[in-house]
Amino acid sequence: MRILYICDNLITFILNEIIELKEMGNDLYVLVDWRDIWVTSQVITPILTKNGLLDKTFARRRIYKYRKQKLIQLIYKVTYDFIKHPVFTLRGLFYMLKSYPTLKKGTEEYLDLRQLFDSKIDLIHSAFSTPEILDKIYFMSKSMNVPYTLSFRAHDIYKNNVRCEIQKRTEVIQEASHIITISSFNKNTLKTNLQIDKDIDIIHGCINTDLFKPAKESKSNRSIITVCRLDEQKGLIYLLEACYILNRRNIEYDCTIIGEGPEKTRYEKYIDELKIPNVNIVDFMIQDAICNYLNRSTVFVLPCIVSSDGRRDILANVLKEAMAMELPVVTSNISGIEELVEDGINGILVPPKNPEAIAEAIIKLFSNGDLRIKMGKEARKKIQRDFNVKNEVRKLENIFNKIVNKQAH
Image (cartoon, rainbow, N blue to C red):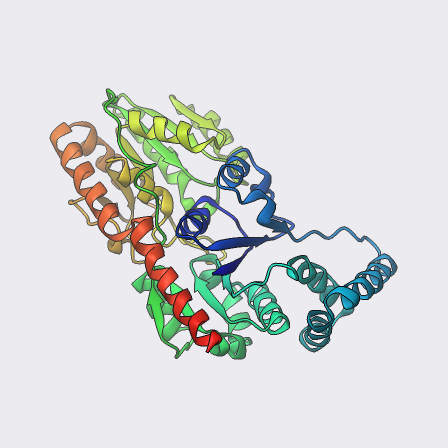
């Protein structure tokens, strides 16, 4: 199959799916958002290159500053395309005019579409289904006359105002060949709050347990780690408060925060103001380096919250990576997290926005090596059983195959 992924954020767990589908023998193409600087980062670019995906990853770029420039470019491209791909060009122009109220937006979408005229795509899949992506996938599906599937994950469901915008696109959702989400919590939200009455399959966001696996190295007994975007919904301010509490209680610790994002300056200022010792914030790094950090650490902490604009994590993939490394995790009891972390079995769940509870959980794990080992073993078992990339992507491929085969007949 030739599958096109449309992404507004090409992040590692989306790449996990894409790479596994490619290794199963499928031909993968990726269309990314022009604003997604993550694509060209030192984390993602090496992965694309290593897996032969760099030349099949297309960026949506706004390179025409003025309307006249854009119109001239459109006329030039359409003339060229009509000679080479008359059917695609006519369909693309028809649905461009039908789908987009302004020439500006329609031109951008056509210029994205034309990059894929030679690709002979069999199916289009949305990695996320934001309102903008729903418009995009509908336009491209109609223009290329191929089926599409939709995946709903987190920010495409819970961010403020997104519900109203998604409900305006009921026709797009109803015409999808299949709808997928990553958790039972999401499925219930889509059914109840967004009134989606189609069948919805759960295919978990997943990781490669061959990449994330523990190595036999000596671990620290006092090391806290987290890996995430430094954003409000991650709740890291409460981890910093927990470190402040540990320090006041004379508990030895060191805390490493790996990540970048809009809250970084705020966190650094907070650390300085409260004089919180032994907290180190470092930028994102390649996967192997992150695994080394995880392998040496005692406990992984991600105190997620529902942010002020409604965003939240749904079974965060960084938790799965830590769990696959046999690292006990401490995280907030929100948004169906119990589907991943079983309290007292493979991790510890704490109330959101509760630094005292976070500190107590850390102390409990610091002081009980046997408990850490037991939780770590159970954590990896959980990931291997329910969040393994090979198992979950095989389910996804089966869905895609059925759709493409049906379309062919």
